Image (cartoon, rainbow, N blue to C red; front, side, top):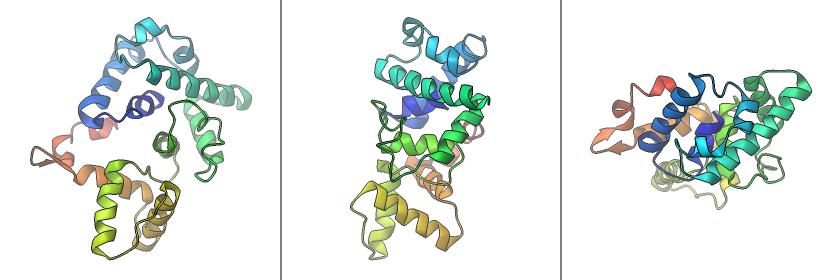
Length: 196
């Protein structure tokens, strides 16, 4: 999940670029038991990692996030996943820039929110695709488009409560209704969705 968020943070196509590279990382490092936990990621050699993904900033960010989560893991004597969940439960959208993970270079509000989503928080990331789809709906409904990302997330939380959907569901719906080459992403990437 940390690798997924780090690769996603640079804005490349999620399904065509990020997912295949995360899968390649899993096969090369996780399946071969080279990286089995957060601590292994922190101590992994950069020259090996860049063979999978060349962006060194992504690896730096992933390692710093892993370092912070590993501290939580050690302090609370929990596993990797529980450390992410613990952090997510104690993080907040409003204070994201003051959060230890929010302060890591390369972690913007979208990556911060994406990590919170992976930690089990019902929220969304205000990325360009989500905003495009939701803003089209707001415009058709003659509703005001929020000026800030935080206000955008708050509005979608409110809409989710009113419609009976979860904010995270609305986020994924916006991603999956988009089409590529005339085929909806949900159709095109149906075999990948269980891995995500």
